[in-house]
Length: 136
Image 1 (tube, rainbow, N blue to C red):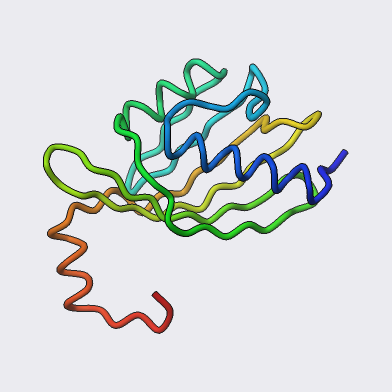
Image 2 (image 1 turned 135 degrees about the vertical axis):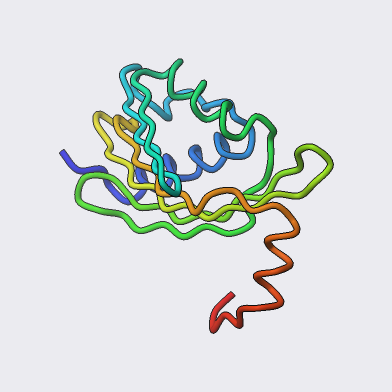
């Protein structure tokens, strides 16, 4: 059964909290959630809540912020586009992600994450200097 828009929106908001804190709010994931993470030139998977949280923390051990996001509800869940920023090792980091979430019984049962890779402040500055975006 597909989630209604309210359920999808509530789960997307909880997912943003997870991305900012590395702690999944109650009811966000099913216990057997599958996380399929795609980064430039690599792919990782985690099965279950504990492994999925560990995979997140391995790549982004620090808490951060999601200054921008966009939600599209689908027939089986939702798509969430996010930008993340965090501080680590004395530098500010940035990434963009597209997250496809499948919802089962009111919780995320599968999440596929397509990530640009992590950009340090030098790469962000280089990109700003070299590329003109039509829509930042």
